[in-house]
Amino acid sequence: DTEVTQTPKHLVMGMTNKKSLKCEQHMGHRAMYWYKQKAKKPPELMFVYSYEKLSINESVPSRFSPECPNSSLLNLHLHALQPEDSALYLCASSQGQGTHEQFFGPGTRLTVL
Amino acid sequence: GDSVTQMEGPVTLSEEAFLTINCTYTATGYPSLFWYVQYPGEGLQLLLKATKADDKGSNKGFEATYRKETTSFHLEKGSVQVSDSAVYFCALGAKDTGRRALTFGSGTRLQVQP
Image 1 (cartoon, helix red, strand yellow):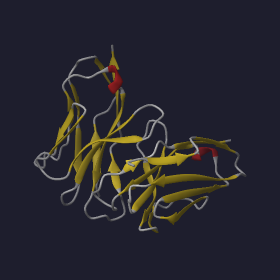
Image 2 (cartoon, chains in turn orange, purple):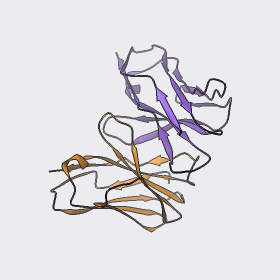
Image 3 (tube, rainbow over the protein chains, first blue to last red):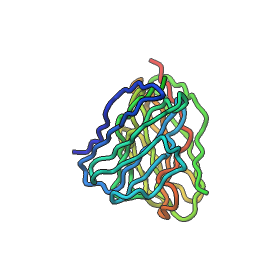
Image 4 (cartoon, rainbow over the protein chains, first blue to last red):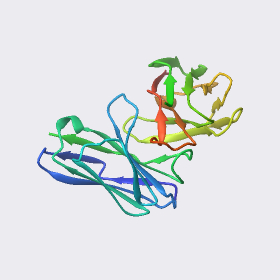
């Protein structure tokens, strides 16, 4: 299995809602990542988990809360988001943090009303 | 810090034309280099990679050679197809993990016309 899966594919939420994005991989990878991608821009790194521990937080606002329940799963909890948070949220995994190539999921298209 | 510079797009070509997308990088040490492709509405797919100087990555007719002397990793394809229309990202992965995982270029949109 060489796939990273993400659910849901699309999400529309109001500014007062709480929702979660989910990511799963079964490649035995020990590093997992969340990226945010705005239209016509490259992905921007948000968080990195290495061996289920948060190793990088790129100064992301606290309305985004990551969680890594086990080595195969990565969640991103969303609360009190702003319309400017609307974007494509991409999950990725790699064998280890650093030089190993990353495998990306298809993303969740988030719209905040 | 590390950085990746790609040529501005969009690049518009006719089918069967030769493609070059330029990518240069700045990094300490000897990074790994990647090309990713993003089709409309999808995530990023790894297209090819090179982990050391003079390595040539290749996949699906695309090639790129890791040139340490010119700090470049240009993407080439001899004959493009309409299905190659996508955004291409050059990326760098540093051996010193530091604060970043991958550093991406700004992306180059390729449009191939029939």
